[in-house]
Length: 242
Image 1 (cartoon, one colour):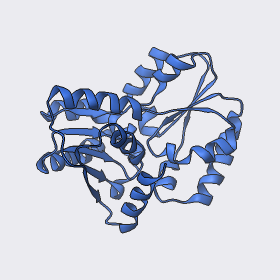
Image 2: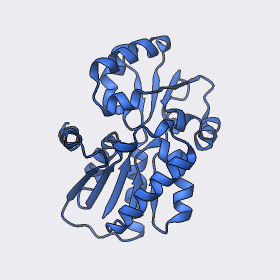
Image 3: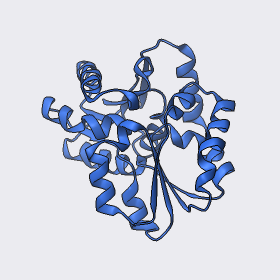
């Protein structure tokens, strides 16, 4: 069994790619919307929250855990790997993809406060800096997406992103952000999007082989910590969409 967790349903953008490539496994998706947003919490809070989640997923029988949240990944992955003897795969902002595929393009990195202020992100940024990049902290955006506040999302993007007209690359440094690609394009035009989901899938496939995780009939158990039944409905709707 493979466990996946995020601060809400945003990690569906990662799970969707995982399911395409690794359809024959049992999964638990843990949506921690009760504690959403992660991006505004302290390191100590996040370490406690994510440690409890990992412990729960291990007790449920998970053999691999995927952190499908950039904030939790950049801040907590080393802490969790040191604490638990289980493969923990962590997403990260896909800035290296810009370096690999469109190095010279003017680039905008969007992320939460927690992600962008982390040492992990700063190291990644300085390693692959194309010297043509702007970093923008999207305070509150993940929460609007989590709660499907469509009108407020459109207003937020118009108010905050128009200043970046002319960028060609947009790094989506939060797993919630791929859910609003269309709305971002409505403001910035036909930009190239980069996110970390494909890197997660590549690493997960490698780990399943390394530990010889047996394939089985696909199943999915969805858990939401706010006990909002609408969360699962929306999660499954997004998962089924092309």
